[in-house]
Image (cartoon, rainbow, N blue to C red; front, side, top):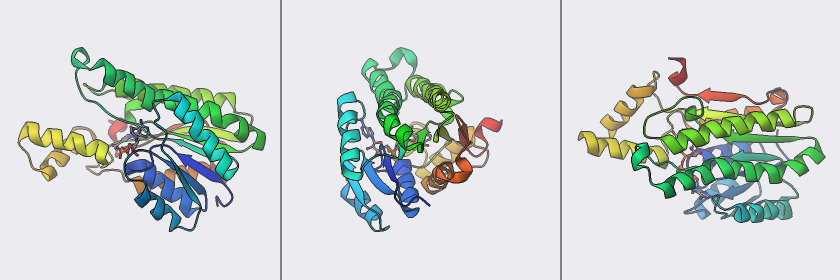
Length: 256
Ligand code: NAD
């Protein structure tokens, strides 16, 4: 379905980003990976799906790095047809104890990076009259949780940015939507499981159960593979007129 298209997925060396990159590659899209840590492994996994894959190590907290990455993608593959703004970090603390540096980093990586990548991707998408911008927000783009001020503020901002991007391009073939996952068992969430296990004297399995019980009626983690399939849907012809949605995949979290 996506043969001849190029998808750039930020923060795709791990977790949800890697799951989405693989799902898009399975549909034939060439992939630009980004993120920290080991990238050779993820690159090989994508290449094994029979598409071209490139990697750029831009730090998504830096506008100049994002500019270099977008230029690299255009130079390598012609243009970016599908942009998945996924890179994100978390920090958990009460507002009065929240380190100012963590606030700034979360707003930069989880929110401002999506603005920068979007503004740089739009001209070529509009010229081609086809494009997909998929913002990985969170259920925390729709509701709050204590001790996650920066994350919740950034994710609500991402949902707002999604709506404006969709509206400004509503008469074109460029759509923009947000995905709002509940708990997904990636390194980002495992850290929160570990903290709970230590604080409550629980095993890893018990701490996972407590985490799910607090918020997610299904008692199941959403998987990167499921989120990848939702991204594929947004890229399909059936998604042509899905614009500005904030689509939850949250095991019933926000239905309560
Ligand atoms: P993860 O920690 O597994 O992956 C995060 C990715 O972002 C990694 O590839 C990491 O290298 C990259 N990254 C971090 N800082 C970066 C920076 N400055 N520049 C470039 N890349 C950077 O986490 P994940 O759970 O897969 O999270 C991916 C996205 O999904 C995030 O935006 C997160 O907020 C969102 N999300 C996660 C969950 C969940 O339960 N895991 C739920 C809702 C939303």
